[in-house]
Image (cartoon, rainbow, N blue to C red; front, top):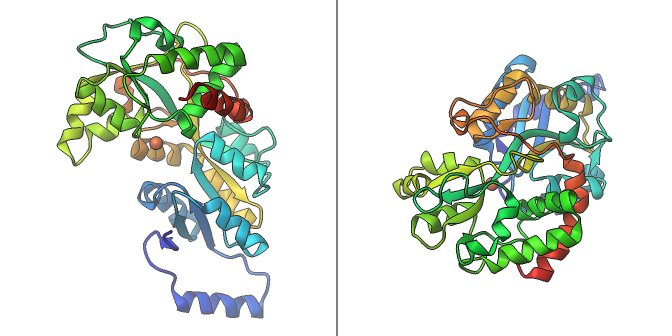
Length: 345
Ligand SMILES: [Fe+2]
């Protein structure tokens, strides 16, 4: 785990000492320093934190770790220096909420900026960006409109044609939870069984590995988060350009409930010592200014409905997103996981 990865500089002992002295002489002093525990890498966050740092003079430290932040927060308890937790996927956000690591935020600004279906009803977490779980199909081997709905992936005509990562990955679990919400557990299980029966190979690799498999002719259809298309296109490794070029992105369920979306999001740490300032940062991250930057660096869709997708992402065209409350997906995730175990996805 990487320790405090400061945005620009390491913690300055002189600043810290001065802060401590000031605190002793005239407590309470509003600390102008915030600590973010993040599952997202600092380079993705730094560009959008710049504006806040300039406006408020706040120093922001980012602790990045792809895993283990929940355990760390629990171990730190009330002494935790964390102010804000930033993560991807609704199931992870809900884990923090379930373990009591978030505290509720009631902010008219956040409520105005983030649509109700993209935030926790009790203000425990707020979505910052939307990630659309699309179907990627071979440009050459799957015709336009041959796949229109996620449900189509269980059709026996696609036997031996589908590649996915493991079902138990949070992205797939959330996707299946959206099917449970739409059709009920039994029908969702039938779908999962049919889809697994159509797999070209054992579930493996990440989302990008599925596009690679399409480019190699291993399969014709895959499930993928939309931003990987752009990450592959812009990748330093030219091989990934080919993977992107071999696929076409299909937004599913455009004639009914809309394409399933997941979120990246944010919550206020229960033991934050700077709650007021931390909420100001949360509000800033939901603002037009930060939202357009955030969407630009990640190729994601802004959660704030008043902000457009980046020019790059717009090439995918308009689409209809499932309006199912993200909180419902979190609630149904355990049901989805049981289905995944039963069907061996
Ligand atoms: Fe991802």
